[in-house]
Length: 168
Image (cartoon, rainbow, N blue to C red; front, side):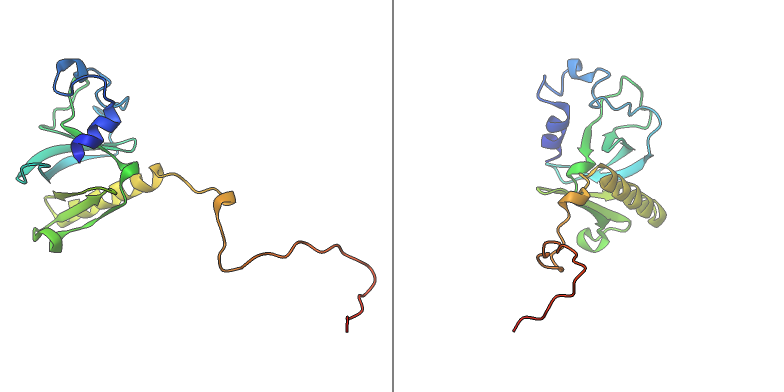
C-alpha cells in the first residue's frame, strides 16, 4: 500500500529506484530536508516483509516521509511517503500488535503500524499527525452542511399588519 501511495504522490514519471527520480522533486515539491513540523525516529513495519525497521520520519506540509537515516539533505530520497489527506485515523495500537508505544495510521485501504521510543513520543506523533490530517483534509463549507434534525424549513411568510382570522 505504501508503494502505491508513493506512486500516487510522486507520479508515474520514471522508476522510483532510479537516480533520475532522486532529484529535488523527490518529495513532491515539499522541502522535506528542513523545517519539518515533526521529525524523529520510529520503528515501522515493512509493507511486504513484516519486520520492524528503524526509520527517520519527517512530517511536513501534509506528508509523512521516512528515510534510512537522520542526515536528510536536499539530495536525500525518501524511502516512502504518506499523504496525510488520505488518512482516516491515527491512534494507539498497543493492544492490536501487542507492542509498547505502538500506534497505527489507517487509510481507506491499509493500516500501517509504528512504534515510538516512549509513551510521550507516541502521543506527540499521534497529536502531530492528527492535526495534520485535520489541516489537510477537505473542509466542508457552510453551504454543504445539512441539518437533518430541523426537518424541511417552511418558506418565509410575508408580514402583514392585519391580524389574520383563524380558519374554520
